[in-house]
View 1 (tube, rainbow, N blue to C red):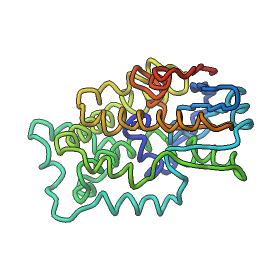
View 2 (view 1 turned 120 degrees about the vertical axis):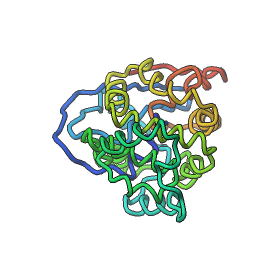
View 3 (view 1 turned 135 degrees about the vertical axis):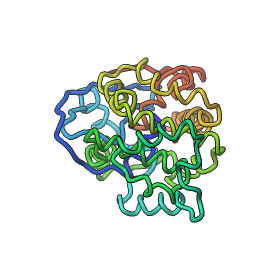
Length: 288
């Protein structure tokens, strides 16, 4: 959301650990949809975390232990292979310098965001605009000591060793969704990333606080900037939510116990997966 939050899609690819641990007991949200022979737990994940975040509450631990299948947004992949896959789509020769792709009035914001994220401006010039936006967002998360190695997905993958693991999407499909965005939408993402990098309280730190406290309203509010661009919302949030709600509805027709983890922003708000499932007549209960 992108994952939830649009930046979350790439955090797991680009972030490496740094900084000091921030020990905290988190209580992220968990929902359950069930009928007489099928249970699906819906967990809003965050793809990169500072070290020391303890998020496996008793309710989560029970759901993880009880499920026979784990479903993620994308299947786990070697970090180097995932990075190579990203770069194969994200880079293109002959692009204008990144600063030249935004209005003169916005270049100061872009410069400050790139600097605050700890990046060299020229390192972004070969990236497509959407990819530069994701790279700035990922680097800003790294400044907050966030690491993919400490994120939710590696822990879940390890916990489900020996059990079935599936995915809703492919990594290539996720990158393609960004790549198809109109140029204006890509510029919007770029400037939003720069603004959030310049002010961490508006970016990763805000997302982390909302997730750790299980605050559904605050999580939904992290998507508010994207609502100003309908193309982004459709491609990265609501369109995917609709496809995932359909997949969950189909899965409810078969017996079993599934633990499904997607970016936290996809499970909150009026256009979320949870809301869409309820609109289809399924009973979805928040259990954490």
